[in-house]
Image (cartoon, rainbow, N blue to C red; front, side, top):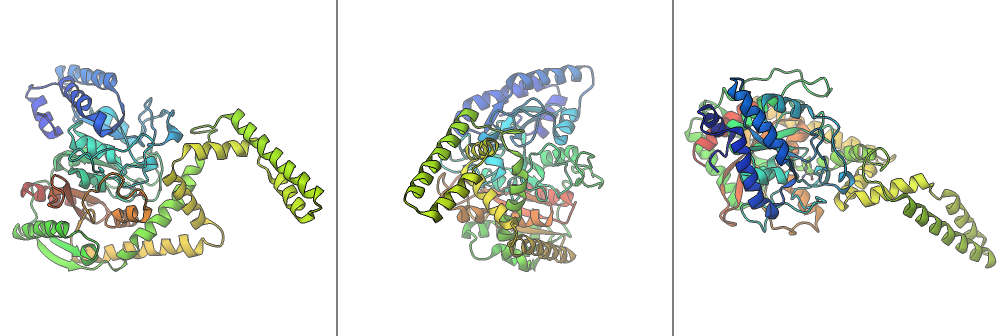
Length: 517
Ligand code: GLN
């Protein structure tokens, strides 16, 4: 692919060497060639993308080129584009179309971005391997027996395979950074509040953020500059100035103080990944950075805290899918029939209990009959049972449990306290250093099916990423080479910085990539 990054495409467009239409056509050809196997897209909008490209070309001819004209973007299927399906990787929303544009979509379209399609993801963004999608798993473009990571697996695979210039993902506990690391792309999780969540289907509202996945740092900086900023449609978006993110690129790392948190290099980290990250650290030191060891003592509570808070928020957010206002609706006649059959069975049992003179049993059965669901309740239950997959149900149950009376203090409250401790760890660390360096994931990509039977094992993928969400910090992953144990599969290095300092992370990430990882 000749113009695989937007940075290159923009120069070619300015030089008159290509057109937006030609760019879209060549990406559509690549999608045709590769996506049957990868399954990265849930929708491809051929006509829409080509029409928009032709419109942008005609505007350019009139001397009216927009800043992002020619940027071909894929969008995770939990972000709303008006008139497009927004499935969230779930049967629940299989037939649902967005009624409005997410704020980021508005802003990107105004700037000239072209949306080529929606990308597959773990169901409601819950997962680390893209295997919980109702539409089947996505495959890692570097080796199709391996997972692309999740939950923004389709976005990462599409960018890595050259099916678009860049993609949007969402990151609640690592869902931009972990798949970016597994597919060898750049992935940026902005500060909580930096980018509007309006039009992002909610998973865990205090943790969710939209971020770009790209092939280079420049494109991530360009995209963030357009996406970021306060928004009256999201009360949690922050009224903080948005700098020119491309301006600081190329400034190097001389004089920067970079911290290595010991807890992120402890037991459980793959040896090759440790060596590769350390090698990058030495290069940064040679380039003039000062390296310091730091401690984030509450890191060990990160995964437990995240899985309590994220599931609690999810159980509340997903209550809206009742099959009436939103989402998959079970067949009403079948539901009524099942209800009738249940009632008849109970009545038969009641009769038998009475005949046998078993008064206790008869009373229990009578109570059960009184409690029998109404047709409406039964419809809710049946719709949700049919519409949600196993992982989503597991999370709703965990979250409901954590919030229930009698357990709230032990679980939810305690997790909130742990969240504060984790945030304070970072605040203290950023008094000593400018940014932190960690591996993005504890292991390289794994094979499809390898972890699907063991949710805990799957959750441990997020051990280095969830803390940034709990603390609301920005995080950036950059690819640092191939894993020697599984040739061809990428490894990512994560940079974490103080609130709203994405510019610093982009600057360091740029230095790492230009150093020739
Ligand atoms: N893998 C994590 C989870 O399953 C994070 C998901 C995300 O960031 N959306 O919850």
